[in-house]
Image 1: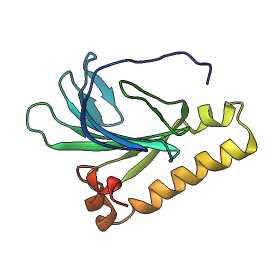
Image 2 (image 1 turned 90 degrees about the vertical axis):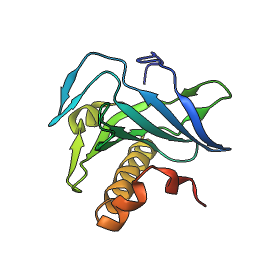
Image 3 (image 1 turned 60 degrees about the vertical axis):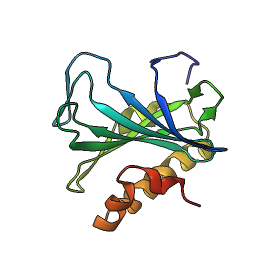
Length: 153
């Protein structure tokens, strides 16, 4: 919200469209517990960014087995997709989706405290609702697998 870069890392472009980019990146921080998961250095992330949607989605895989750990969606302003960089403004609200379909909304209090316009707040809540609805069924979860389905028209 304040134009401060929080995290920068490298990723490999797997797919690019005018308003969408799919990256592969590897977790580069110390091991950390995260809502029933453990994120470890080397965990593989598939990351989908959109210039026309109010969210991005990360698919998190274990570094040793490549097993799916979870999907993690950031509610954001639409991403700014450049030739060499991707930037987005995180709106605090997040959705963690476990492989069994269980969902956990994170950081609601932080989101509520942000100085957003009514329009931005409604866009963010609509994005969260879209993600929750889309991933509420086994079919929706299957479509998320690999994130490539998000790149179809």
